[in-house]
Structures are given as C-alpha cells and as structure tokens.
Amino acid sequence: MSLATSTISELRQKLTTKEISPRDIIRDLATAVEEKNPSLGAYLGWDVEKALAQAEQADLSQPLGGIPIGIKDNINVLGEPCSCGSKMLAGTYRAPYDAGAIGSLRRAGAVPFGRLNMDEFAMGSSTENSALGITRNPHDLDRIPGGSSGGSAAAVAGNMAIATLGSDTGGSIRQPAALCGCVGLKPTYGRVSRYGLVAFASSLDQIGPITKTVGDAALLLNSLCGKDPRDSTSLDVPVPDFTQALGQDIRGLRIGLPREYFVAGIHAGVSAALQAAVKKLEALGAIPVEISLPHTDLGVSTYYIIAPAEASANLARFDGVRYGHRSPKANDLLEHYMMTREEGFGPEVKRRILLGTYVLSSGYYDAYYLKAQRARTLIRQDFEKAFESVDLIISPTSPAPAHKLGELKDNPLAAYLEDIFTIPVNLAGLPAISLPCGLAVEGGVSLPVGLQMIAKPLDEFTLLRAADAFERQG
Amino acid sequence: MPAPEINIHHVAKLARLALTEEEAVHFHAQLTSILSHVDQLSHHDLAAEPSAHPTPVYDVVREDVTHPGFSQEEALQNAPRRVMDQFQIPKVVE
Image (cartoon, rainbow over all chains, first blue to last red; front, side, top):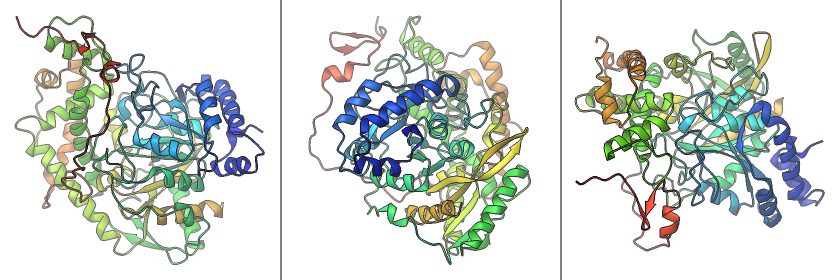
C-alpha cells in the first residue's frame, strides 16, 4: 500500500525501525499527487527533487523527522512561490524567507512538500474563489472541498498528503476539514506564529494543522506552538505536550450544547449526526449541559464588518511596487495603483476590500466598525460565561455538508451565513477542532459531517483529549 | 434603518480599484444586500467596550538589538520593476 495513505504516527514508527526511509515517503507521495491531482486540483505546485533532497537531510531524531507536510499557499516557504490563490502573486512572487510556522516544522524535522490551493487571499468557504483552478471534494468530485483551506483538506482526505497546514480566519481550517472528512484544528489566537502568513484579518487569523487523526493534530501542534518575537501577537505561555492528551478518558467532562446553535436551518443529516455524537459523548461519560450564547446571531454581521475592514488595510500592500502584479498600462501613480489592483484581484477580494473600505470610511466608522467591535466583546463574554459551567462546547462545524460546485457562487451573503458556527470562535480567539462524526446523505451521496469542539483560551489539551476519545470510540 | 446608500465610485477610488462600469453595478447591488444584513447590529443595544482583538496583549516591544535582515538584492528580488537597485514607480513630479 502507498505510504501516502499513512498517518504521521504510523510513518514515524516505520522510520524509527528503519523499515522505510524519508525518501520512500516522498516518492509515494509524488506518485499519489501525480495520479490524483489532475482530478482533485488540491496542489498548485510541488517539487519532488527539492523534497527528496530535504528528506535526505531530515533529522529523524526529531518528533516530525522525515515527515512531509503540505502547505497552504499563503504561508511563505523560502525560495518557493506563494500565490495566495491570486493572479496578484502567481507567476511573479517567490518567498524570500521562511514563515515562523515553517521554521518550527523544519526544526521538528518535517519537510515542506507542495503548495495547496485556497480561496484567493483566504476569502471564501469553497476554494472556488481561487484564481488558479478548481479544487474538488474527494468524496464527490462535483462538490466543493470547503475553504478557504480547501486544497489542504482535499489533499489529506484524498490521501495525497500525510498532513497539511491551513489558516483559519472565520473557519477556514475547520470547515474544509469537516466537508472533506478530516481533522482540522484552529489553535488559540496567539498560539502559533503568523510571521510569514500573508495577512487577511490580523485580529482573527491563525495557522493550524489538517490531519487524518486527532493524534496527528496533537503531534503537529506540539511543534507549531510557541512565542515568536517576529509576531508580536504570539503568546509567551507554556506549551504542554499535547500527545499526553491522547488515550485519556472523558468521564465527568461537561459538554455545553448552545441552544442557539441547534436551530432550524441545519441540514437534517447534519442534525442527526450531531445528536448521535452527543449520545456517543454521553456513553463515554461526558455530561451534556444546555447552555446559551445569546449573541450568536450577531456573529456573521460582526465578522463581515471586522474581517473586510482589516483586509482592506492589509491588502493595501499589493500596490505593484515591491512585489506581485504590476499593470503595464498605467500612465501615472494613481492609475498605476488602481489598474494594478483591478487587474490583480478577483471578484471576492474586490468585494471585501470595497466593503472594508466603506465601513472604515469617514462618517461610517462609528455605525459599522465600532459597533462590530462592541458586538465582538459581547460574543467573547458569552463564551466566558458559558465556560464557567462547562469544559467544552460542541456544535456542527458547518450547517450543511459540501455543496455542489457553483451552488453559492452568485450569492455571497448566503455563503457568508454558512459560517455561523465557526466565526464566533475566531472573534473570541478560542481554540476549536473539527473532526468527522458521521455522514449525511445529500443528492444520493454520503458526505462527511464535522463535529466542532470549542475550548477555553489555551486549552487545546482538553480539546484534543475529548476529540481523541471520541475518535477512538469509532 | 433603510438600506444604506453607497457611492461605489467613491469607495472604489478610496480602495484604489479601477472598477469597470459593469463591476460597479454588480458590487453596488451585492454590497447593498450585505450591508442591509449587517445593519442588524444597529437594532441591538451593544453596551460593551469595543475590543480590537481577542487577547489581553498590549504594547509588545522586543529588545532593542539588531538582527541581520534582507540584503538589498533579497529585498528587490520580487520587484516588478527596478532601476539602479531601487524600486521603480511611475513618475510623480513634472
């Protein structure tokens, strides 16, 4: 069997006993990518020779020694292109440095392998906003893989990656992991360095792993966490050994079920899978507790003010001067900016830049941005209060399984509303994981459903403990 | 609150985007619909301090020590146009 189907822990065991070499893994992975990528479109590029050379040098005594990790194409890897799924950067930009998270992976012995497709500048929930090609869901090629880290999730689910990195601003790790049937973890805001992650919304962005198992997520998280002086928001706090959370029981763990999350509008198959998940957690000894997050209905509105506002500022850097696309048609400096950006950005990015510019513009700041910041406080306080009586909160990751390609393409508002369960987590800066919890039938096809678990700030340990217990229960 | 009136051409200029007329019409309609939705915030009593980010970390400074950075060549390697080892922009003075 191809090593591409393996987990990190399986491969580490075989590497330790010298049953295989790191080069064997790269070769099998390359074969899988060459065979499957034409139909799945998860990868934007990969360099087998470079990966083989790096695998040769990998320090196998390190926890991720010899393990190839696929990288979402908004994380800088020295010498590689970093397109963000955009014409603004594709074909012109090469990273002059390693992102903080890439440095962490390298120190742990891992080998970055391949660049993964994404919604342009991480804006979207379907990967259809990539300017560089379509990514398909391995469970049904007519459906979206979710997004924005759609390539990262499809590669793991399609057994063309061992594990990958994604980034999550409003659900972009958890939602594609849910839709593709893999595990996706968004760490606490500040846990993982964002140095070298192309910024979308800086008060929300966080890098995290997409993996085949909860155990692999713990392994990757161990290496990713920690203070990085190059990211002033990264936290200088102790990092536990997250693998110690594995194999534990969850008797007595209090699981919050927010009544606002279990409402009409959720797909029947998702609803049924969630109810079964609650039963399973109960059987494992967890105690379900009904809780209230009263400001849930403000989440999407708050997010779609704050995220575009921050994006409009962050994406001002794409001005055709220092890197990226530059319009050949401009006659003066203003035209240069306006035409470079008009030609380089796709429709969703323009939409969000316009929205963000509008809500920050003179006369509207108080009406939109300031209100959204107040709502954000209320949403965070909801969680703080809830966590006085529970250890974890659970919800569906997404209200529906994977849509067909193109289904929500011309209705951005409908697409935004699908982020209802993932967005509040980013606004509050909490850690959360999505893991498979069964299947929902849609259009005659069985599609994966994701269970989201949310924990207190910096309590990824409890998250992994509960997710691992749930996963082991089968 | 009625649907907000957006001067899309003004916003596009602030955002430095040379929209086509077709895009202007399209985005105007979509932004109006999105803003009507987010206007729900104005119906709520939002009695809370605004928070700009989720963690209680403020005014982070690093030690004032120098580190090696990019060479001039590395800094310029992605420049769409360069002249005399500098970034080149369109002429801004007569």
